[in-house]
Amino acid sequence: MPEPLKNLLHEALVGDMADRIAGNAPTFDRSRFVMLATDGLGALELMERSALIRDALFATLPGDFREAAAILTASLPAAGRPGLSGWMLLPVNQFIAARGLDHFDLGLDLLKALTPHFTAEFGIRPFIHRDQQRALAIISGWLDDPDQHVRRLASEGTRPRLPWAMRLPQLVKDPAPILPILTALMDDPEDYVRRSVANSLNDVAKDHPDLVAAFIASHIDGASSERRWLLKHASRTLLKKGHAQALANFGFAATASLECELRLRNAEVMFGEGLDFEIRVTNAGEITQSLMIDYAIHHVKSDGSLSPKVFKCKAIMLAPGQNHTIERRHAMRPITTRRYYPGEHRIAILVNGAETASQSFVLVMPSPDPA
Image 1 (spheres, rainbow, N blue to C red):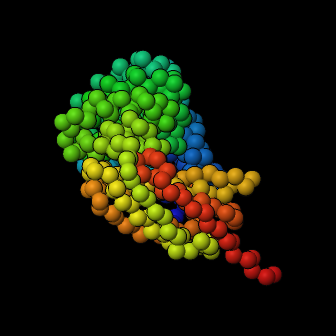
Image 2: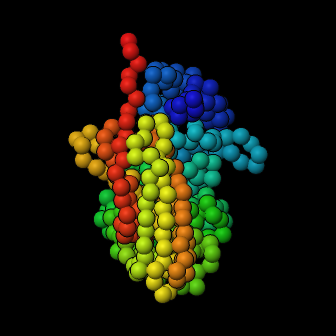
Image 3: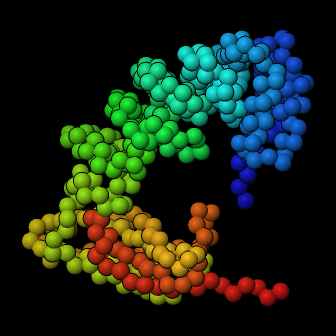
């Protein structure tokens, strides 16, 4: 079993954190910090542990944020000297987000200095929420920073729906203010940054599909292979949903004279095994067609209704009269993000976003072990 995430913050890490702060603040009460930061730590989950350590920083760093910021800045790694880094900076993010809002520029400068050693994407969001225009003006100044982590912070920290982080409701409602940031970083030399741009656009697409589809269309002509990958990755939610403009952006037009056949190898699936199926598509038309073939599993919910989940399959070019066969197995096994229920499910084949074939199958749950 993988190590629980909560164990990323542990007593030994707290001790190391205390040593690195104490080395830059002679008056820092190391013993009190460790006592407060470890009191009940083992019973808490990851973010609760981080909040406990943050509260210990509240109690032991100077009440004047400018003095506390100077200590934290001096405690970051420099010139080969160890300092605050990695997961010990998660509670520092929380400290800055809570205490730095009334020292706006200084707080963001500290997060910028922190991010090469551990992401500050969580810490900058309260600043954006407090004063979006001012925060984005400062963040926009990071777009040419020589450090890739700082540039990525500009795109990742402004994502409207960043996982594990507070949402930014103003940007969910109107993402226009971050589009110049994403445009500026679209051709960043680092894949690490470009992936962040794609993820941010994909976030926006969940609330503003037409806006993102139009944005992609305006930036795809003459795109490099790297930019084209970014734009397609940014369109992944739209492509799964069969958004017409998003499909057209990548040459997937509405299909014509296409025949699609779906064959199930097993119409009854025991939970823990898999659904084996075959897709056969034939181009009965007179022109070559570019096809994006996906499939959707319509899972049974607790109330008996069906809920679809789309899975990527294959993109092909099919000449007139040509056919293509795809064989797949879809595993039906325990995962943390879905609860399975027995009963009649459905699989549907999607070609360029349109359903072209479907069949039902039955999921059987194993009998419980006798007591």
